Length: 531
Image 1 (cartoon, rainbow, N blue to C red):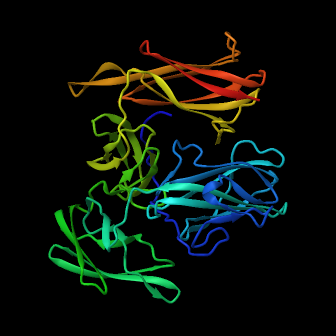
Image 2: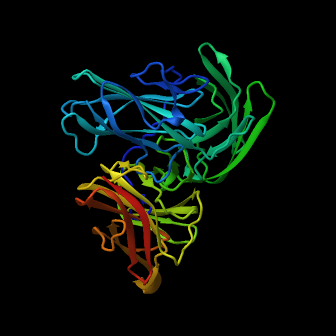
Image 3: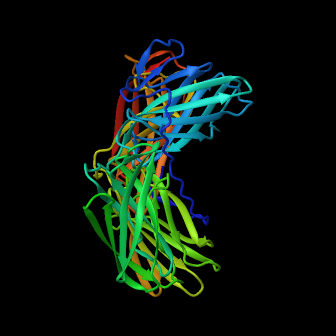
């Protein structure tokens, strides 16, 4: 996968869909310990954290996986939760209907119907399928279980599939009432409306009929005018952290304007004050209300590698169109993405993006420049990628070697491979040379100098039986040859590979890689069992 941050602007209205929290009871969790019961043995209770796949029904699960393409063993809060499964017993002629539930040891955090989509080849009664949902930034870190319910009325077949996963959440709430985050646009248009997002910590919940209620007084002051609003929250449980969105009217006066926000719980004397400066532009100005959002529609400014999200903004025009230029620059000033001449026709826009697996940690900047027939405006939006910093090594090596089956399910490292089968091989390469190529560009009678970075490697796999000198299998995996505007400390090498028909037994696998821009090379040795 090419290491770049990809943002494709789509001219559609902004539609933010938040996960709906539900408190309904379910059949696989309680307040003490999560347990599941296999239908084959109703007396056996299996702790979820000790089972990888547990299911019940009149079909057979051949394989199942959460986050199969992720390179980590957890889901980051706010990110999508993809699920793939291979099932025997359903007919490939009829559709599947499905629903899912997600719970931790405390409560059910999500209940929803879901669309089941087919993946790969489905033959006879063996079906490859998948689904996807989204976690929330307010879910606490810890262990969760995802319950998938599948039905096929035409064949009277059904399945309950229990899959455990870990959720990582870098936000740690305090033990008192607090406004830990306030998301507010830095620039907007005069006489417009903007959204203020509040991340509330430990509001005082009180029982109100069958729900819980928390109330607080919200005041904001702008241009010496004070406004007052009562925030009333209703929920099925008592969350420690919760997002709340407020719509505010922007004054007609332009210029840098301080907004003063005051929060006070209804039955408390303690106040929280927050100051925010907002640049207010004329009503017909371009590019304002720019935000990053998680896949579930929650505002997000801190990301992890391989996260995905949306960039939304208001173009500022209603009838005429324009062209958008976009660039993504890391903390070192290196360019990771340049898109020019993107046609923009709508007023509100929403574009997806993803953080590459090896994107540099630290702050990055998204530069937007919108041009119409008579106006041009440029805006900068900053965000942050967390994670360790990658260093450049002079010793080439391959790491994290994984074999995949059916493109979706990684094989157990201690498992075996079958002869005459197709596999997908994935690993990480580091230590190759970043070759710099000096370039220059003539523009407006000026010479602009810049560097291109060229990286590449070619790999080969060998299988040798013990005590033999000649390999039984020699297969070329292909090459990666890439030119970028930024340094590349790591490469993800993906290749399809067919294991030919060979005798079963143990083999020594040698993964040999050669740098295409230097004399650096690596050899990784591991044992494979062939069946």
